[in-house]
Length: 168
Image (cartoon, rainbow, N blue to C red; front, side, top):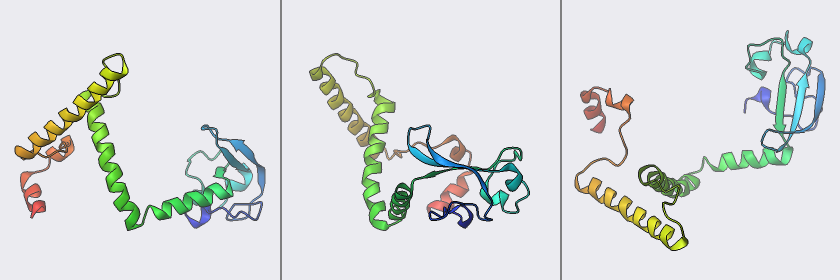
């Protein structure tokens, strides 16, 4: 988070140039979460030299408005983001990403999102057969040495010599 946007929790003015507030209060976000809504005066924000660092809207008629998480939620989010940068977290994420990739393949290739049959026994059988089909597709890709991931249309436009040089 840029220093200009870093909230200063102990004071009532989070603006970097100490401008006055119009409104500071607790609201609910669109997702129903409790947030702090801070609104600054248009007359204070418009001539401010730090305006572009604070707000990214080209509309100069609207005042600067911030929606901040509560202090404990903000601190927890910052800790979680810092943890995601560690090697141990990235190793755990690789396993989870593999499971998510398999589930995505099952949904897209085999239509796993909806059951074709009624009843728990038939639905369970469909899931087991879908898992077997995915395994067969992976075995086929391994035997024929076909890559599991598809090549995007953009990557397919790349000249062949660039692809060969990168593989070395």
